[in-house]
Length: 168
Image (cartoon, rainbow, N blue to C red; front, side, top):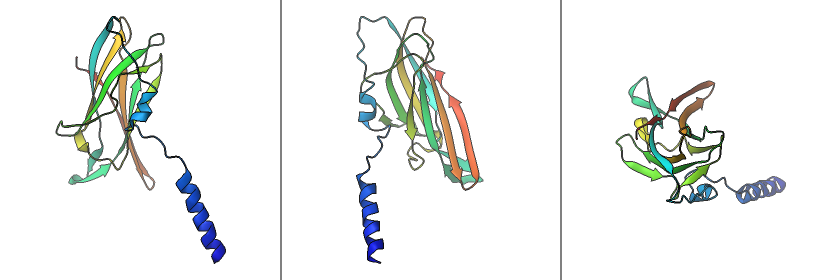
């Protein structure tokens, strides 16, 4: 009995000492991508909209299922670095919930990074969305922003995607 108790506490100690992963909400996650953009650069400005679903309705309007959302930020240029100025997350009512980074970030050619919205984070509701502001070199393809939502309960799984639209 004593050995089991000792092993249990050793196990708890090992688990509590493990380094926690850095969330996409945490500023530390984005600091390594921080970019300084010179006003002398002749970059083109753009703005994109992406629909995201933290929850979806099931059976009726009174029952919802929570979803994990992966927001994929993609530089589809194979030659140019692009810059994402802001990634603002809004809820169903259009209220801004958070901006994921305070300074512009860069994406190297063909690079992808993600924002993850955990399944337990239902602050966005059934009609959440992102607004991305970005800058790209002239004649560079626009960035691609995609949403991949999924949920798995037991043996049943659900997943679907959305793609961004340029709005400015």
